[in-house]
Image (tube, rainbow, N blue to C red; front, side):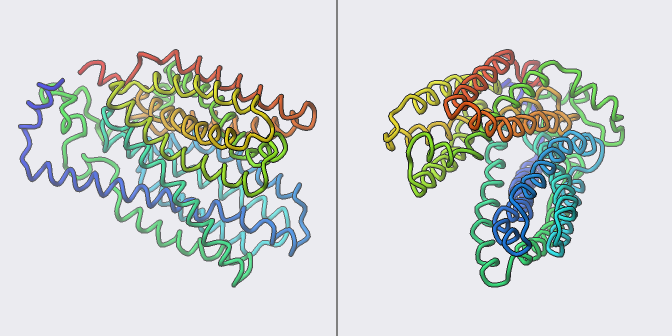
Length: 440
């Protein structure tokens, strides 16, 4: 591969290489800003909920229904808009999704009854689902399979940045202007940022008359480049896209793995503070500190897993994912059986669990794009996201049911078995990677 890479790189001038690197850098920062922008008009609702309930006398059960419907539509939308993103302009899909989400937030700000909240917030999440598949599509066109694990993990941190920004900004807006402006002001930002996304991003290097990523990185020899060339004029039909993505058993393996990974991840994200308070005897501030540690460790763990999958495992996403989930079983068991008042042990376990859980979640999306090829990357990634949100539903309703019926011990058992099943499905992809890497 090294000799091919050297041979191919000599075919391009330094000026071409500089232009290519400029556009890759521009794509990365633009796609990160764009995806973070989605969270400005997504995480704001959670900040506004207490004020909405107090002002309009809406029950938490009503709000729960709104959130559940939205989550279901988001999961379904990921697969649907994945096909749209593969067939049409991914940057346009992303910009339109952000713009429509902004409009739904404006409508939310004018709403006063549960049905209108349910309709507009569900539509918002439907349009929110246009972001992830579009990003997956552009990443696979601008970054090669030898580096995309690292780049995907870097891009994935943008949602945490966006969430942190709105969590800090929204309370200030709420305090000075009221809950309706918690929707209005982020929506205004999102409208302008949708224009930024449309202006700064480009779908593929070929759309700028630059060589395809396989040529620039030497993965496809120039003489054989037709094998890997993506003809932007000849679009795949929806049937062909689905066959390329869902006709691949490896995509199904990582999809089912994602369902179980999300059961683990979302149980800790949604129920973590309550679990720590009730089963481990943590204080409210202590539980909050542990969840902050969980989030920070998740960012670091995702970046580390992406880098290792590229540099140590040569583009194979399975090994590091399996190791993460297998180790997770041990850490969750330690947390489960640790003494109730062992707060240091709980903190260390939550830190390590956060570090481990993010890697597989990120690498499953990368693996799906690898296995389906960049022509169906958005559809494959969207499909795994749909199954992931099925896991989210299980983590939400299932955890609540188990706690009420059997107590927190049953939740630890659920997480452990979910991690084991995730590891088993990921193990089926242990030696698999992008076809172009196997042929290079």
